[in-house]
Image (cartoon, rainbow, N blue to C red):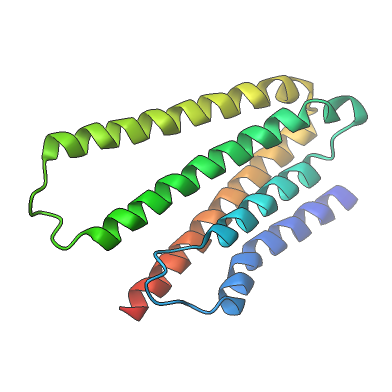
Length: 167
């Protein structure tokens, strides 16, 4: 029963945390989306929630640093890509003027390759730990991952909507 209660509390906190953050964070005109501090906070929250949901044993703890590093590295690269998009958006006067579709495709391909590499590194970091998880831990991992990703997506979408409202 305590595991069910813990998961319910986790889901509630995760579902409401973007709303609380949005209420506490005043929108800034032209901010270009979530700040670096917001993204770091979301990553810290994601790492903490997943680790807490897993309730790792002492033997499993030795695999966690690689997983956490991979999560943080992927988030850092995502943040860099988002920042670059903000810079491109802010610099664009007329995105269709002087655009080269071939160059756009190449840049997009490079970004997709980077994302794929980050995801492969994350999977490689998770694999040794995942093999040691019990069925219950695997279910909690799936649930927590889904809820965390949805929470992050909702927080980013809310930030972008707030920016659109300011225009």
